[in-house]
Amino acid sequence: MRATRTIPERAPRLLAVPDAARVSPETPGVEALHHATFLQLPMGVGYATRDGCFIWCNEAFDRMLGLAPGEHKQKSIRDLTHAADFSSSDELLQDLWEGRIGSYSREKRYVKCDGAELWVRVTAAMVRMPDGDPICSVGFLEDISSTRKMELEVERVQKALVEASRLAGMAEVATNVLHNVGNVLNSINVSASLAAERLKNSKGARLGDVAALLNQHQDDIAQFMAQDPRGLKLPQYLTALAVQLQGERELLLKELADLRANHDHIKESVTMQQAYARRCGVLETVGVEELVEDSLRMNAGALTRHRVKLRRDYRDRSELTVDKHKVLQILVNLIRNAKYACDESGHDDKQVVVRIEAVPEGARISVIDNGVGIAPEVMSRLFSHGFTTRKSGHGFGLHSAALAAAELGGSLQARSEGTGRGATFQLTLPLRPSEHRND
Image 1 (tube, one colour):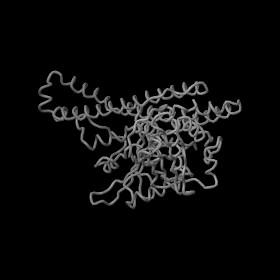
Image 2: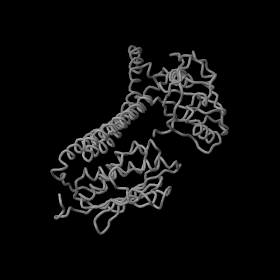
Image 3: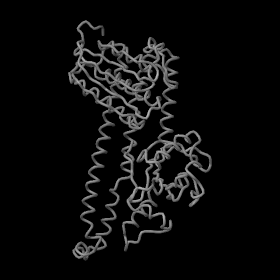
């Protein structure tokens, strides 16, 4: 989830400026710059009253919803919201206006003027007077329809391949590949989307404006820098721009590193599954904390998107000699399931705790959630092939995870106090493989 954006300090006064206004090169005041920014921003921006009627929206908002220029003044947030999202949208707006929350960010559906469904990520906040009284709400809309379609298509293809493989009698191997690679593909999709967005919104393009300004004054550059108000502000602007570009560079490098790591994990997963029946995976000595952090990184995008709070409770930092990628497959699956359990619970305080502790057998990794819990009558079937409690689940993840844990010389166990009371999954692993383990 991205950080909540706040409206510029003087933005409410922009509502009085005609839409046709343009920034004059001779008078680049802060208010005019703010107005031009909101007009030209590729993201939809809309101001609304307490009853949801729109006061002002930029051109991107109108285009996004298929509205004619100015048509938004005849609409309200409720008019454009998909019927399935009415209730949750109204509750959040009421909480915002009554001061119970300062802002919110969520995914929701709008309905375009032609009746088509539009998925957006909306970030909303309040515009207030200096004394704190609310003036209006402001929302920033990002079109995520293509991402949603991609996710649905990936799920559709995965389900089709799983079913085909199962009917062909190769479900045990094929579904493991699809399930584990699919988890990593979701992380790759998040990293790629974030990198693309960073590049799209990069401030590097403003360097061209700076260069053009300097070229205009190349014959009197000293006087321009010493006397012209724009020239006087230029060093400070370039310094700030350099800091921002450095931050963008670091974020992009991090996302690219994550992409490379996830790509390597996919290759290892496929290679391991191809040789599954012939030999054991390569053994490595690795810190248990490193394994847990790798699995959390692969689930980071999904945890953030579903607003699940993550808490680390590392009480032991032993080293294990294990098949690293088998352990990662188990942990990625457990954390992913915990995220789904929290999301389906509907709790506001969704939380997953990952605990590492030393035990006589070696090291134990616990994934604890406060989600939907597990009913006592299904506990005995939890690790059975094909059994699942989720409508969209296929029942292979926990089964393959339990098999992998046994092959590593460890165990995978589950505990829950019942429906609605969360669940705990405990992966216990030896510090080193047994010499007598059957490979």
